[in-house]
Image (cartoon, rainbow, N blue to C red; front, side, top):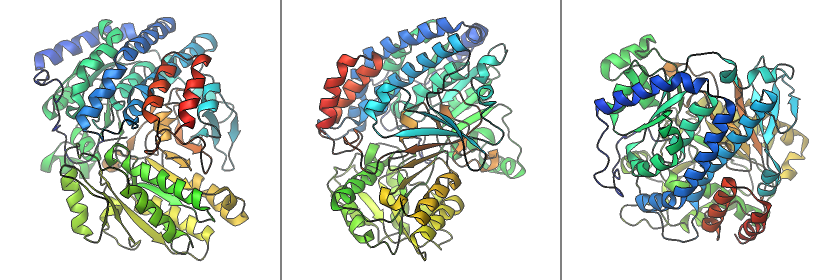
Length: 582
């Protein structure tokens, strides 16, 4: 999940706490970095049991602000008043508490066994690579995500024999401590906190975390949530825009950087801006001589494998796809951007009509993210034939589909630019057979779409039983050059469960960074990751809580957050009752 390439300011900055967020002064920034430099060695050498105790305290302190957190996000983003909508519980406090709980478990594994325990089998793939099943992580995952499995596929050179040597590298390294700068995105409230937790507990680095202007209203809550780390001198939160970010990037006290944002932000930091920045990029001469990891944007594809779907299945998948666009108003880097179908699929027209109907029934969102209207206008200028689905009151953007894109168009904006708003394109591909279509779709994604962050495949189990088509789908999973590939669930699940690495497919050089480099989340601390692969039932039961029609998602999100904060089997009946009521 990431911000758009356009706009770094925040129209809503300070909405809820007006006047309390002036940009941090250079005196404040220098003092923060002095503290972190002083404590970096202590943090690097801090015993695991003390880290575990800090996480216990963080779980309590973040639980204390969870309710206010959700209310603040709903108010700032002017979300629909539908009391069922539990989106902010899930993408905020729930993800953070899950992240903390799993980190605590893994650090306990490290303290006892010396390595993070992999919860599932490790297997060799047909191409000789190694895949480790990491999800479900525990019994609770099996109960909450029935039928869902997730693997981490490793890069070449990792074997079943040496896999443990490629875990928890930072805990085997003897170094005097490092200071990491985290520049967070402002579109999803858990991004910044979880990026900071990753640098702290996986990379063993103290953190200066600049809160994004768009959601700096969360600042007082973050201060309270992170209090144990702040009081110990291992974390500092600062505020400001481009000037503050630039000062910190160049500061001699900052050793490493992690950016969640756009490729344009990355290039400005690494190469500089204007003519000189363009020259440096062309000459491949970065101005910044520091390790940088980054999670950036993506034109996220959804590949529909043709099959025979019942009316119920067709409507379910229409809602599945609609949710991939409408969640957070489309301000997600893993949102649906290009829907790919076989032009000869007999149910193509029926499916697209079901999708139109579903989106038309979803209340439009306030366009809170900077530059949304301008980006939307660019796409509409290129495609005046785009279909607006449903009404859009002032201040909102309509759910919009650009149908019948031309695969041969060399300069198609929908293929090269992330819209980062409520718009997606639909691409029909021609092929002699369904299996040939799948291969053509994979080639199109790899060669023509911008970015390598995540891709989703929708395939009916009966299609997998057809020898040629099933084999083509398995090749697709292996061949798609994306950091996360999900079958039947939205690939955003790879972000949310935090046990799988989240980031671009490896190999992007700085001058062609696309979706970024490095990973976050990744609580099992793998250091040579190629991709995460999820598999889910074609029609999940009960309905996933992130579906926008889930009737009980608000209360369910609250209960799931409370469960992650303090798991107990006594909490399960209430959770299952709410889940089944969706």
